[in-house]
Length: 417
Image (cartoon, rainbow, N blue to C red; front, side):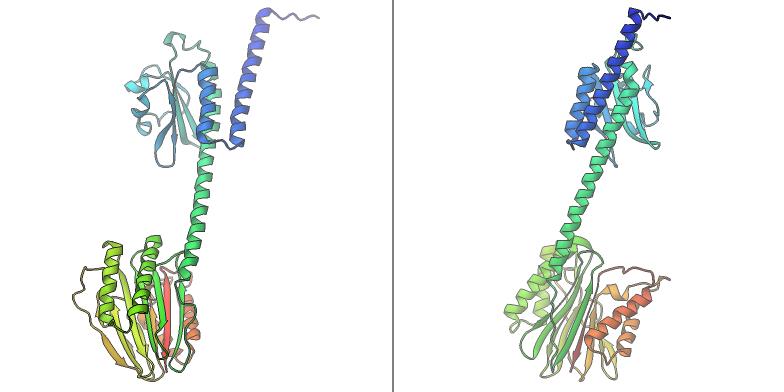
């Protein structure tokens, strides 16, 4: 049996083969660009070339969703129209390839076909195509390519989404590395060694909630028998709080290093208040406790600027050090500053801390509070200061159960012999 193929059938077969070859080449060109990690703009240029030059589409707008808003990422032949269409209001209801015959929206009527791009029932993009003659719409060579154009657009949009996601992950990784470096730099601001001699035994511990924090403590040996120490907490969290505290620490150390013999605690508070007001512009404040101890006379002068009251424990009594003033940076000028001077009993313990300790909650939402901290100090009174700090955090871990620390947590313990 002989089969004879007419010239008409041969022409249709040839045309079909050419069409399939075109589609294959287009897909290869796009996927090659994606695999070569071309920029989004270059991928869109390839896409535009295929539609404009090879499919002879003269009017087009492509909208894509960028996790927050609908944005036009490609348009030609539709000058100004891309800014007049509200995708969320006017296109979001379209689920399938749609030929526009008549629309109440004038800008939509400017186009002939709308191609939606969905992924798992979520709209990712809308492609609007125009410039096709109405009387030729059903015969236009571009019409039969619409499913292919939809597939091609889907590949483009998903590639752009993946690239955006990869860029976000890369940016997050860079930010994480930067925060890790900032955290390491911040640790250098804390003293690494504390004295343990015939006058004093000191230890401290700091646990930031995040990579950088807003708590700070310091201990400065002024001479063989005099010591300055402090603890502070800045309002707010994150990088801004950490930067403000770093600036505060630098100013404080400069004042103490060059002026400690001339400056009183009252003047120190006034200077630091000016510094915080200048740096924070009224947006943040710092709570601050500072003490000056003389081992020779066993006297402690202190000022508490709105900070959690340090706990002073001796063999007989427990008291809170609460004399001072409002927090630094709360007002341009501090109206009243009260300095207290105490003659300490031998073997007294002073524990300074930030609110991350006393505000820590257990599984029932009950805070740890100052009373529990005082009881922990009393029950571990004979331990060294390193061991005492260790026991405080063991108590905190037992208390909080599965709850995480709510805030940065710092403690500094001093025993005065």
